[in-house]
Every structure is written in structure tokens, then in C-alpha cells.
Image 1: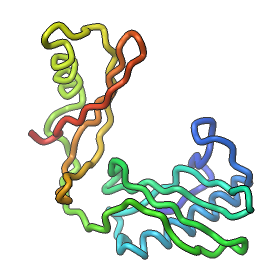
Image 2: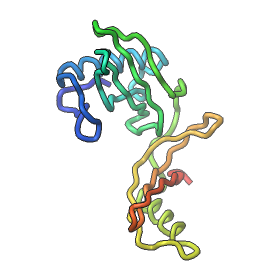
Image 3: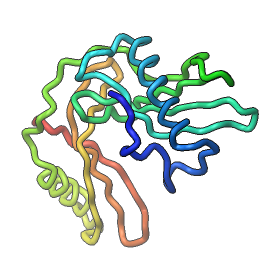
Length: 171
């Protein structure tokens, strides 16, 4: 996956970036190529997309990348590519499990049903019924490395307390 000028690499949610958009896009494309090659995810389904590009206080550049499979984000899986002052990748920081996935990314349970299930669970035994919920489709994995498709449902109560609940999108 390549980064283009029409995609947002940085903005108000990502903090201040001390580089031009052109510089950030060039670094992001270098980072995507280097990280994908380093963990063997160079086919069209596996990949990374940049989330943040920044220059640190000593002038070194870094690009944080989120991992995707077939357009669906892998929850919590990121890599950070580190660059020297000449733009060459010097290393990576990653929590990514270097696994090739073979996963159906079409949910059988719709997002609205997942949200309904979470609302019911929260309200059970006298819990609040006036919560707001939102969801997004993600891929997560178990401790033993088995990946599964799920809805990440975010719940917020009237006091602003938040919780995230994973709902299996297949069963």
C-alpha cells in the first residue's frame, strides 16, 4: 500500500508534526516498504498504513504504522520505522506478530447486532441503559496467536466513563 497526498498522515488527533506533508509522505512510503519486506507481508492483503509521522528533538524521523489485513485493522498491531538524518531506515520497534493471515473478513454478525448485545449486557442486573455505543470491525488475536474477526464496541455512559468490548463477528 502506498501513501498519497490525498490521505491524511497527520492532523489534530496525532499532535504536532515538524515536517512538511511531502516529507511525511516520502517517509511513510519508505516505512511501509521496509516494514512489509522485513516481516514478509508484501502481498495485496497484508500491509501497513501510516498513522503518524514525526521528527524527534534530536532531528531523527519516525513513522508509526498500523497493520491491516484485507482493509481491516489488526487491533493493537503497530510498527514504528526509525530513520537517520539521510532518510534511511535504521530499525523498527514493533509489537506485530509476523504471521501470514488467511481470514474471511466478512462479518456474519452485523455491527448493529453487536452493539445491541453490548447494550443488553451493560444494562443487565441494573446497569445503565442510557449509554452511547459505537463500533468498528477489527481483527484481534488470542494469546496463542489465533486471529479472529470481531466488532470493537466502545461504550460510554452519561458520566463519560468508557469501556471497550470485543464481540465475535462470526458467531
